[in-house]
Length: 305
Image (cartoon, helix red, strand yellow):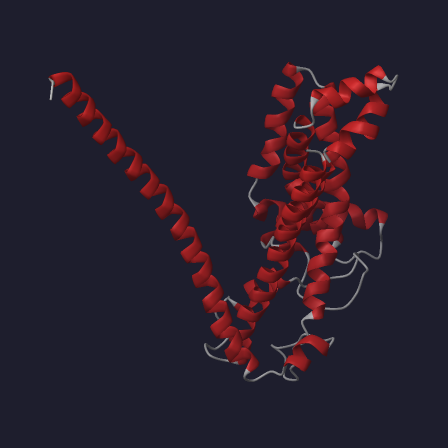
């Protein structure tokens, strides 16, 4: 074997070793994330079984009160789900239209200079600690809203929902903008060729073509809102109730987990096990929303191929 062939073979072997090492590292990273997810599910399932050994499924799914920390205990999960979805709904009312309009502006109207200024400012909302949002909602936004809504309580679903909307606004705007950019230029040119104005092209062609990505961004934003903890813990209150009135105090699933995890609940009690059941329900809701967003995105992407 000549020196040239020997050097080539040696370099090829080294390159293969490096590629195998990189592939192994990537596989290990993926395996670790899967392992952690499985471990979380296993822990929640085991502790949840301990809960249901003392509480019947009918109590959990059919009761309309949630008072596991009271003397007269009730374990109906619906008040916590109601409070969680109510705050998330207020957040979506704020974030979805604003996020979509911002995405349309950035993708179709803003200049390169304006886009380079607006996008970093928008990303600041994602970098603000959620505890700051919570105290801002409690100490500033709620007193201001009470001037407009005198019946608004000190703790309510409205002000944390509004602040949560601004928190998830960058997610909606960024993902929606990516979906709008992915629309082929030929579709927009075709709309202009048929005599459409820019607004007609945007709302008649661009947005419908990117609807899969836009809806997926909405659902992912809702998933983020459902799992938010500190804002609702600080500003929404700790009163689980079945109510659609955002001016009342509510309790969310994440806020209840924080409340029980403060250390006053005895380990091994039904109250202690309840945090795992609530966490499991939150996990299932978030998993369903993420799965739904992927299905919608895939459905719309296939329809435009």
